[in-house]
Amino acid sequence: MKIKIYSTPTCPYCVRVKEYLDGKGVAYEDFDVSRDRAKADEMIMKSGQRGVPVLDIDGVIVIGFDRPRIDSILGL
Image 1 (cartoon, rainbow, N blue to C red):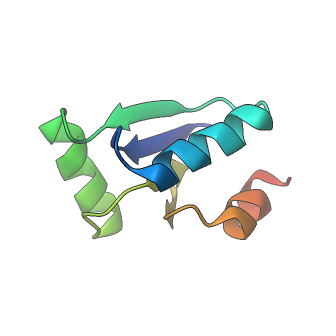
Image 2: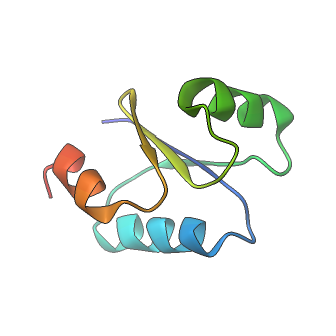
């Protein structure tokens, strides 16, 4: 399963979602959209959102730290 997180270093929900996934032993790739314009554009194209975090879990887009939805998709 491939997980991408689009985040910024100053976003508290971004930190929380990464800590949550780390605690579950779930690997992910993190993109700092405040520094990477191409990834910011990719995030907006995928989600229609400018806010973070945005997760792409095998093509399923999750906006925000929606723990029940993340757990459901990951089977946790």
